[in-house]
Length: 232
Image 1 (cartoon, rainbow, N blue to C red):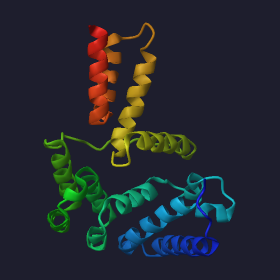
Image 2 (image 1 turned 180 degrees about the vertical axis):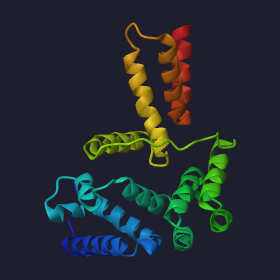
Image 3 (image 1 turned 45 degrees about the vertical axis):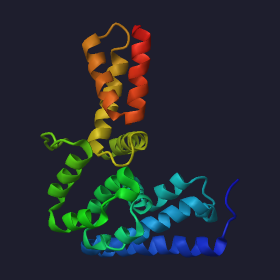
Image 4 (image 1 turned 180 degrees about the horizontal axis):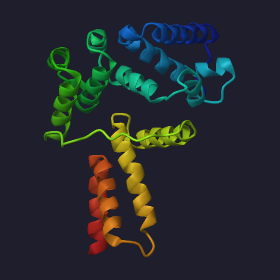
């Protein structure tokens, strides 16, 4: 059953979202200062189905209108609001929303045991890239592997399908995954499909191995158990 529709509250929340988005466009240098508030309102729109006020069919359609370039940022802001404890969200304006997303990854993993004070201090002190590497090391137990930035040209007509594919991969993998991980999964899926029938078994094995890395730990154990039973 859909929630009881609160028209008055819906008008207020949708107005606040438009106000913040308009403000952000005019004050780019201060864009991080209201991201906590925006994430909270977006979560409320989804929970209360306030998008019905505009005769839309879904929350995704609402996001397409408010974030025409990419809905990824909206999901990031919502993830921050959903996973960080209130005492952490109050201080996030000091560190910016990109570091806030990294904090949300840790908070989602640790739950009530999240060491909020320590990680907020690190977020304030460290440059963004260094802080991201510190979080990656904490989550994986290893140093971040070497990386490089790749540039290539895309036509405007190509952007919608590429953005849609990356956003779909992000929904499957979890919004904490980078666009690089999402692109890797898309490519691995293509290679696996291209080598299913009379293809290169080594390429198929490589693709399957990369897919395995994206599975949550519980699903990895189920997968390994299934393989063991089939081998027996």
